[in-house]
Image (cartoon, rainbow, N blue to C red):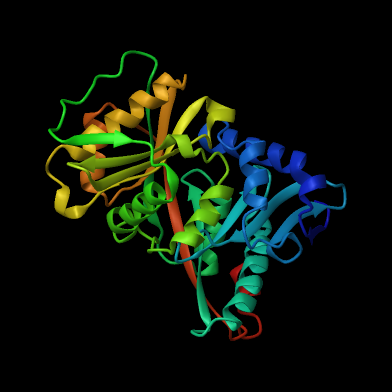
Length: 327
């Protein structure tokens, strides 16, 4: 094996290699390609991400790419995300090298925060064995399980019986966006693992940069004129799967049990079908029993399992040998 080295990702030069790396990873772990060039380019251009300091490409002297990682903190996320791509031929040592980079960078970030620490999160599929071995060896906490689910949209999408007074519309103008954002914070952030309420301006900046984001695919659910639910559908997987991706959906806690969630879900499924999408995809926390029941009742099926690993990083340097012993 040729010696490995870490270099900053230069998006203009490295994007084709990253797209190939992601495709190889997806085929090995999922049996299909999910991550495309648009999504990767968008993530590398995320607000606040500095490619010189927040990214790393792991290569050998022969130029073969073994992996890549970049760090970002999305609006509404309490943790810093290490988005890590590992080639099928890579080893746990390769993964540990990338995690070392992420750890060092987060330690620097933590030094600039009042609390002196940050949470580092890494989201991986069940079959990314080398990476999961490295994460466990590194000391990442017991992972939280998620399901990737999908539903075909090719045939007629059965409509949900109408709920008196309920209407689903696209939020427009500042007032509509503020209503959408407020419902998102109250219906989704408080319950979904790793999510937290965010400010409107911060959310607006991030949602505008989200790869595949399309304002016309946001859905605001109103009951008798009151905003009570929301759904955020993106084109994240349109390039690779021809699928609509249901990024977020929620109904205010006090409004649940009235079939509003089913009504909203059926509405966005029908809208995606009208746009020509062949299927819809989502990722759900396995602890969300009500959501799982709703998805299964509306025809969604499990495709694969993912895990969210978390690691608390402090600004204090690790004792000598601590990081290397994780390899």
